[in-house]
Image (tube, rainbow, N blue to C red; front, top):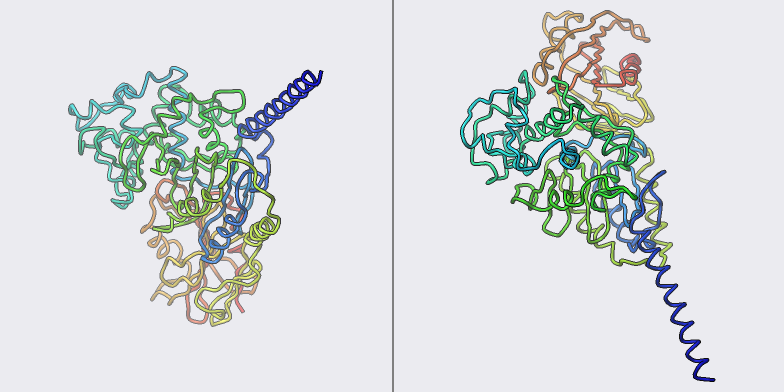
Length: 538
């Protein structure tokens, strides 16, 4: 009897352990495959096997060095463990993602192949443009395939990367037909042999989607990619030919950028739906060719030898996908030159090492509190004003820029505006507004013999001609500022590369000097009206 009882207890024990293991496995599997339906689930780092201490040290490092990062978002196991925004940026605002757009184009090509609009990546690109004649045609150009475009190895003499100061990109933008310009380029080497970053070939990918699906690329993306992910708010610039720009020009919210990364980490699956073929995710994120900026390049994705891959955009826009750690990390910013590599360094030295366990870690309330405090502090409006050369030459504080040196003046500016580097002679201040362009104030000598009414439509136009094209004066009229000073208001439209800009300019002569305040905007013009309308002199 005793033996039977023991066997019974052993059986019940084994059954209990089995139930616990099944529950634990089910919980872990559900946790690893969590998808944001109404938004990302929030978690502490320790609950997802990450150390708050390292993330706090990362935030302190950024704050101490004043890196121009706009946001950091970290997803692990489908849970959001860090969502930080640096003033004046905030949650819910779209951010330009620049060349991260290319990785989205790769996904759209994969979907188009899966749905039968495109045969395969070995298709010669000439088949996608039957109505176009190709200049510089030879056997090498005839052999360019869709895969060659995807892996930046077209063999075309593009010259439109940072190595050439984007000379070819500007030439394409000023051409009458962007696709024709790229297709007409001469060959530099056989296709498939050498990596040569080329924005123009990514533009061709968008043209191919439009030609083969008979849909605008954005419409195709909304239907087959964005809406299934719950991504609704998208901005995307178009070429003069009406084609969504495949190499950049897209605006997304950081939370939505993370959704795209999470789709790839889960091999194209979203919940119970396979949005993107898993085979496409595998092949497109595998290093096909040695690259210049980072180790390898896949199909419009950069691939690191450490085992992760990334969507990379100008000035520090990043979507990092780290399969080994079940992490997606998103960065936005305004980082130039070598600073654009900062986000990758933060990933390598802080984020990946912070993920020290596949299981939950003991709670660390002190470090979690420190991390939370740092996230709160970087989001706050700076308590002191900002200056450029000195306080009497000009200080911006609490929505007002004041200059006490002669000629003394002030004007108001929108909340959230941030100091920017001076980029023109005679400029004494410059600021940016998130999502828009910038505004500035300048002081210089009065041009000899020039009437005030001629400054905007004559002299200032010459300044714009150095950076833009198709410049047109919309209006130029005398106004009286609130202080009684006579001034002129000049409104100008022009193109910066291909982006339509409206410039609002108020100019005045005061104390023997020319003073002008200008604001440049490609949208939300109402934000800029108060700046120039509020200019007053003491």
